[in-house]
Image 1 (cartoon, rainbow, N blue to C red):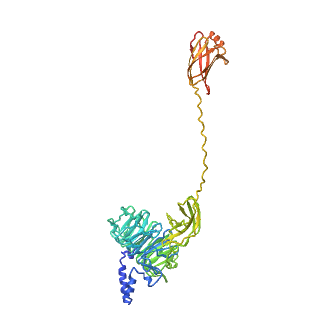
Image 2 (tube, rainbow, N blue to C red):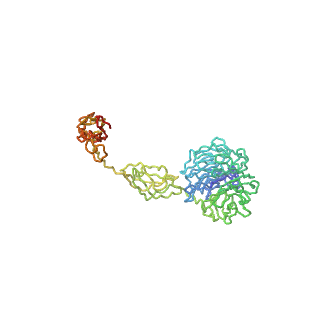
Image 3 (cartoon, rainbow, N blue to C red):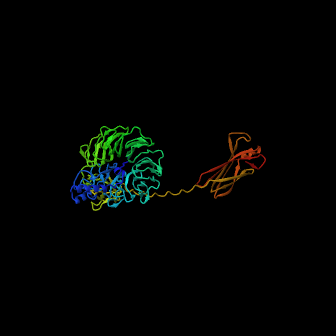
Length: 626
């Protein structure tokens, strides 16, 4: 849910001077000294310093949604809480429920709206002129550590009534017409990096009092009657891309001061009494599809200024006294089904300007000073069951620097150490970081990036060196008390490896001699077969010829036909005579014979290689075929 707030009745916050003049007149008529009257009227002096009362000394216009730590930012026309000056904004812690006076003071005007940035800081808007002594015209961003964001400075020319944070964009609505000197009539979008969105420019013809973002749609309510030249009476929907929603047009008959989005409904509150021609007195629900909700009709008797939706309940605040004819003074709870909650009736004695809900607690801010019969000065908490809760914020206590961390345990790492600890008391302001010392507190280093939980890592140390380590927490007030020292000696957990002996090189083996050779065609003489052998290395060449035992017949038995052997001393061509046996010569006289001739070459020191070929010797011829 987006937190929204407006100045009183949505008008520019310029009424403080008129109220101050009236106060001076009343005091003078009562015989109070001019000096005291001036003190009471001056925004630079806190009324509560003279007449201490619990709570703020002026109206509360804004109660933000909580940040991740449960802290809320309150804004209004006050300048002090209890007897302590705060300016017109105050940070209220979740744990203590007390105001942190160390957050930068906002001066020069009111804070009308506030919203968390998601990182512990807050965006604020109003008619103020300064934050922490630095000029900021009507809008500012305060970081989690209390420093002013130097990059985010929209510099508007008039009041901001409403803002909403969505992703990396902050949407603003109000009475302004320029943002950083660039024309933006009553509404603008500024990136969280401080850059004006050039695409989002609704260009309305009068003020925006309230806005909320749902998905890719920004809903606006105010005093305007046109958006970009198109008629839209007091309420409109504009896409985050800057395009006007043509389907959403409630068409009210008077201004909208409050707006909230929940589920598929947009809840509107203000001065109107009709929506699209249908009677709706001061509050109505319009679907995101543009259809008026027929069941939700609180039917109030006066203006609504603030909304908060929680589950199936809509909480309303303003200046009304009845809801559907039932007495409800300035605050009421109506179910999303339109039924008035019979048990929730705070019964305030003056206006309610801001509402926020968290769990079973409803936070209220305004100009009231009583809730029921109990005194509650402008702030209060009421249970969702209607029970008045203790004063909120609690009695003012000035924040101080954090207490010392305890139970430190240091664990050594490689050029690093890890510090486990128990956090000390934050003393009224959230712990935002830690500082550590490695020389027993002589010098301190701020943890970067910031760390707020145990353990804390320390890097950049030297292995083998013993350090005396201390730790201290930091909040917005400053660095707190230091812890007791613990010793740690970083070590490299990896042992130095034993050098591996250099291996003895393995001798390169001598390559085996080549056994390649070629046996060229054979010639025959009467007594031998002649071959030419081409070898690649020295070695031995042998030949063995075999033939069938019975010439001219197929027989499995074979006999030797010729034999030869020769020692070769060098590579090259060599002749080899394979002498025919008497059996071969005899068989040849009777007919042709077929000899299987196997030539084997064995290089010196190498392996043998054989070639087989078939040789035919004819009966009457010396020629050889094969």
